[in-house]
Image: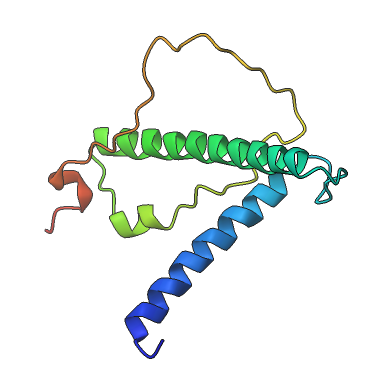
Length: 127
């Protein structure tokens, strides 16, 4: 652990992991207590909660990708450093206790999961 690069990498991974678990805890319905002593039931609750967290993160990442692609399509520059500061753990846009609808019909169009930024739109041209 005397290597600064290794310590920095471990800290980054630990921070990401803690951020995910904090987000998943925020999404948890019914509080932090799992009422049964049955390990199988507890595992199902944890896995379901992580599944919901991953779905919300995926949806937020798709929204961020769409927004960045729209900005780039308008000819505006998209700075990767600015884009890197946008967190997928947003809580103010999630209707935690709202009406959730499960629609199993496949969408007409696949979601945009690719960030299509050409080199000319990554950074503003220097004048």
